Structures are given as C-alpha cells and as structure tokens.
Amino acid sequence: MAVLQHERRLDYWLPACALALVSLGVVAIYSATRADGGDFWWKQILWLLLGVGVAMVAILIDYRVLVRLSRPLYLGNLALLLAVLVMGRSVMGAQRWINLGGGFRLQPSEIAKLIMIIALAAYASTHRASLRDFWGLCKAFLYILPPMGLILKQPDLGTSLVLLAIWFGIMFVAGARVRHLAVIALAGLLSFATMWHTGLIKDYQKQRLVSFLDPEADPRGSGWHTIQSKIAIGSGGLTGKGLLRGTQSQGGFIPEQQTDFINTVIGEELGFVGSALLLLLFFGLVYRGLRIAMECDDLAGSLIAAGIVTMFTFHAFVNLGMTVHIMPVTGIPLPFLSYGGSSMLLNLTCVAVLLNINRHREDLRF
Image 1 (cartoon, rainbow, N blue to C red):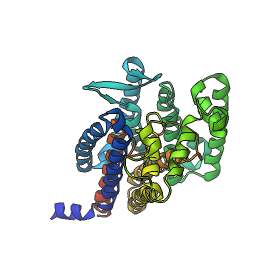
Image 2 (cartoon, rainbow, N blue to C red; image 1 turned 120 degrees about the vertical axis):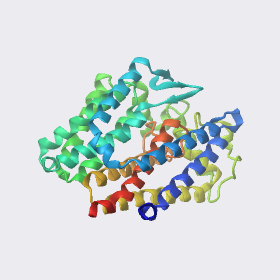
Image 3 (cartoon, rainbow, N blue to C red; image 1 turned 120 degrees about the horizontal axis):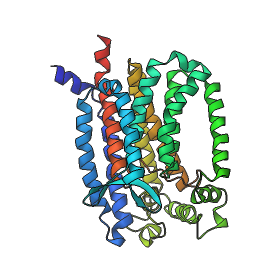
C-alpha cells in the first residue's frame, strides 16, 4: 500500500515535459549534424539512457539524505573541480572535461550546479534567521566563491553565472531582503567591471559581450553566430521549412549548432509552431517545479526545488535569448536539448530530485 501511495504522489507531467524536450532535442541534433555524418544524436540517446538510470536511482534515495551529506558533497565537488584543472582535457581553449574513455567526457562543472543547489539549500535552511541580516547574507555568498573561482579558471563564465542565479533564487525564497540582494548584485557588477579591466575576463568573452551590442561591427567574427541565428529563426516563419530542410541548419552556417544554438534548428525547420511548443514544454516543467517548491513543508526540500527551477529558468531564458539577440552569447546550453552528456545527466537527475521531493512531502506531515 505504501508503494502505491508513493506512486500516486509522482508528478507524471514533470517527466513527460522533460522527455518531450529531450525527444525534440534529439531530432534537432540529428538535423543539425547529419550533413557532416556525425553521431551526436546517437551519443545523446546513450546519455539519455544513462541519465534515466541515474534518475531512477535518485528517485529512490530520500533527498533528505543528500541534505545531510551536503558538506561532504560540497568538498567532493571542490576536489572534482580541482581535478579538472590538474588532469582535465582541454578543448577549444577551455579545460572543462575529464576523459571517461570510449569518446565520452564528463564535465564536473555541470554536476557542480546540483551539488551547489543542495549545499546552499542545506545552509539556508539552518541559517534562515541570519539571512535577514546583510552580513549574514554576505557570509552565505562566500559559500559559492570557491566553486565559482575554480569554474572561472577553466574558463567557464556561463556556468559561473548560473551558480550566481541559483544563489540569488535560493536566498530570495529563503527570506533574504530584496534590498540586500540588490546591494550584492550591484557589488557583483562592480566586481565584473574590475575583472574586465584587470584581464580576468578573457578577450573572447569580452568580444562576445561587445558583439551583442553591435554584431554588425564584426559580421564574420564575433557577430557571426548572432547574425546567422537571427536569419535562421526569422526565416522559419509560422510552420518552418520542414525537418532536414533548413538552409541555414543544413548549410553549416552556424558552427557547433548542436550545442548552444540548437534552438536555431527548431526555429528554422519547425517555425513559430515549434518554438511555441518548446516554450510550452519549458513552462510546464517550471510550473510543476514551482508547485513542488510551494507545497513542500520541509524548508530544505522547498529550497532545493526552488534552486532547480531557478537553474532551468535561467538556462532557458539566456540560451533562447541569445539566439534571438536579446541576450549576449555566453555559452549556456539549452536544458534537455543541447548536445552534451554531462548536461543530460544533470537535467534528468534534477527532474528526479524534484519527483523525490514531491514523493516525500506528505511524509513530513505525520
């Protein structure tokens, strides 16, 4: 009877939206890479199968166990990020991966997102009163500086921004004052300006931000992705040009289209209808996640759910925004759709954690 009761508590809409997004992503990856004879779509399916297996295990492990293990997880996360800098593989000037063999690589910075969500939720749930004080909030901010610093060293500005968004989301839900969060956000902008002028921000990262303001200034260089992306999505019209028929997608005008710019395939080949479906599925995912966060009686569980929702929302907003030129190109993938094994494992595990929180929320009322 207990098992049947748990099964009735499962939110089937949440995994349904996630798997629909994954399916849409596999089709788009196949379309984006088939001209080159790549096997990215097949590898993505393999990562999906592995991710489903990991997710099934994550559903069975009570999330409160993860909360109790937050400190060892945090320290293990730092060790893994340090290992990347020591023995990681460098690809296109970035050292972010650890080889697993067989052509597969693990990106620890992706795993760091979920670990930091758990660690921040555990910290905020036990120090909630101090978060109402400005200096107590600053102390909580120090919690994310070590992993952020190691990730920036790779360099990976996009993931560092994701960790910032997660921190702000969790602290806001935990009860931090808005004016205190605004002061820290302003301090962050000043720090970014300092990093810009001291060379901590790489030249190619600077160029991405500059080209956001005026992509036509360097149409064959830093502005190329933005210009071609707008052409691809704009040419899709209402119903698109049809699968495997996109001139921009099939012509190779957007390099590495299967990763950060996968939305251009959907916009060009499936048009406004496909883009609307994509947004609807993300809305369903975020809405169900918010419901779980609001209905959970355990503060730590509610904060973990809020952190995951914040991560999904930030990823989707920034990624979709940069393909239509309302956000700068920052290298943030589109959850469930962009090619990447580590990202797939992270996203499916996050869905499983949300299901886990929803599954156990009624246990806390007895």
